[in-house]
Image (cartoon, rainbow, N blue to C red; front, side, top):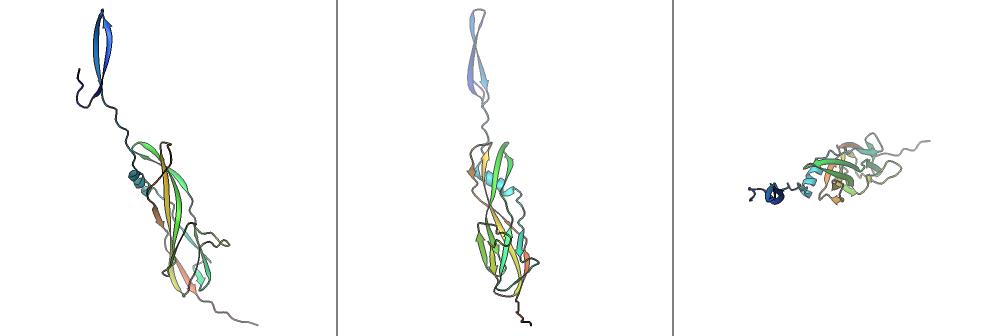
Length: 180
């Protein structure tokens, strides 16, 4: 017995009827192929995940520092895990901040692998050479790895950046005064 279009696997099923042998054919529809989650699909999902806001902190506080003084900068970013559903399958994303690009507002930038730290741990500092008003930003670059349905971890081919809001900084010059 022939199976119709789109049907596979003719399965003979025999049985005895009153001493005569009869053969029955059953046709089964093909099993649907499991949808394939591609690296491009995972990257697209990663790019859609809401990332923590990048908040820039400057020390000394209150938006004021001095020329030729080590001004401290830091942000707080921590790795996190989230799960998304792609093509009906659970995809776990392990998301990590991997670099930070500091734009000091005076035309200079620096890229670090650490988010800086509060005083007294001066990990990311900058010395302004001129007085003036500056807009400072930091952009956090996030990378990720993923696994489908608890399988092995694979790297996501791409990154996502999250810039901070600009933080105003006034750089002044201090004049020493001798007193009795």
